[in-house]
Image (cartoon, rainbow, N blue to C red; front, side, top):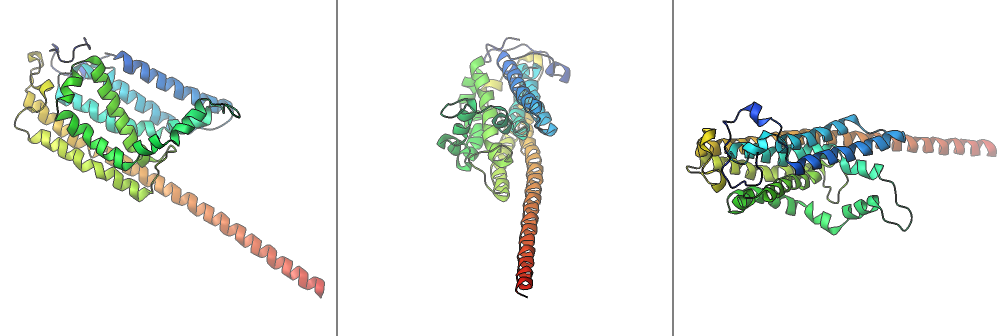
Length: 315
């Protein structure tokens, strides 16, 4: 398939699941996915060789997250997504709302901090650069809900309901940049909420739930707007190739239904993860309290025994 001219008509046969899942790799995303898997694997291997444990669940989550990106960008879905609004919306929703959650549950930053060796006194290496970035003012801004929530909303309304989307879809570089943007927006939105990796903005569990639900209604409204529209709203998808045998308005309605449905799926996934994390943190706090109480009890017992010993000595 020719990926260089998204604005040109592409003659594709009618969409089927088999054609959608056929291998058709975008070179940029193929290299990025392979590099991500290689670096993560290096980190896990490094920890294993020195006798440290790394949870298998995190590795599985990260690998599935990378594979979900590859599925959207390195198969026929990427070709059909250039001419079918519904398929493009599947790409958008997975890459911005499912892949980021899976990648974040893999805790790649924690793995990097544990695997990268310290550079030594007075020197700066990759680990020191990562720590400096994590504690930077820039990172505090881009992970703050006052930034992430409006960005999450604007990525829908300001993109699809302005000429910007058509401009980006007109070139391969624009399309790649848009997909990278979707992934980045999902990562910065869910990172403070998931709370697996260390970060500058780490609110309490209740506040994280509020942040999660603050953006989702706007997502649902966007889907409803596409479903209720009486005419095609995005120029790129107004005239689908005749070979597809689809109606532009019906395809747009389907895209709206996909966007609306996906406002619920990630919410449930993140909510379950948050509740599990909250339960685990309460368990850890309870164990710390129990240990502190035991230490206090031991100290009181020692003081009482010392008091009895002093009385005995005086007697």
